[in-house]
Image (tube, rainbow, N blue to C red; front, side, top):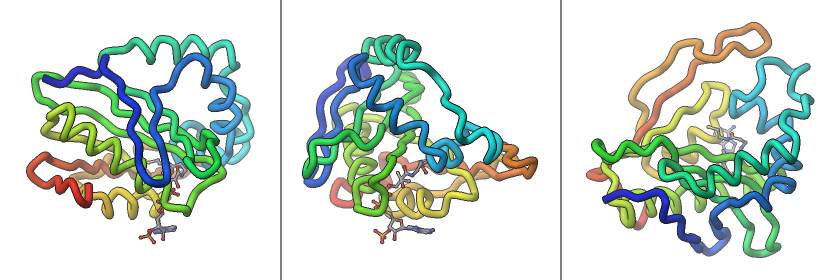
Length: 191
Ligand SMILES: CC(C)(COP(=O)(O)OP(=O)(O)OC[C@H]1O[C@@H](n2cnc3c(N)ncnc32)[C@H](O)[C@@H]1OP(=O)(O)O)[C@@H](O)C(=O)NCCC(=O)NCCS
């Protein structure tokens, strides 16, 4: 039975996924104000807004404290093993125990293109299918983010539909692609 109140540390070759806590709020906030992360995760609606400071450390401490105790999501900080630095966040969320399904999201700041996101995605997916016995993991990726889509396809996610112009950015409609991976498609070696 899937149980997201169980939040283990996952260790790969390049990264470690460690359950996020209140104490991670300050370092995550410093990373999440990255304009590229804000844009690609759909957190802002224009280039002007992308320098917006967002939530305070105090607000985020409260949020992460709640998430650390949540039974419907696992929030991990992504730690680059070579440096010991926190570089982003990976999340399994919206657990639906009856359907054995959940969502996935990830962001990395200042450390893209080194293979960390691919490995972090594989580790989270492995945990979802192997340890939590899930049947389906779903995510959303914007059409202006081919890098993320490439990573998701490489790990084994398939495109299954599009929420047309789900995001308005700089006044333009941006499609949001829904991707998913099923347990029957998952191969531990690749996913
Ligand atoms: C998406 C993200 C998690 C990927 O992590 P990463 O560590 O940068 O990715 P990796 O280094 O493991 O792999 C990047 C891959 O994308 C490819 N890539 C880079 N730019 C690309 C582009 N414009 N189009 C297609 N593929 C691209 C690289 O060649 C590499 O693939 P390869 O290993 O087959 O050569 C990370 O870049 C990120 O968080 N970006 C900002 C926020 C974000 O986009 N979050 C996801 C929202 S859905």
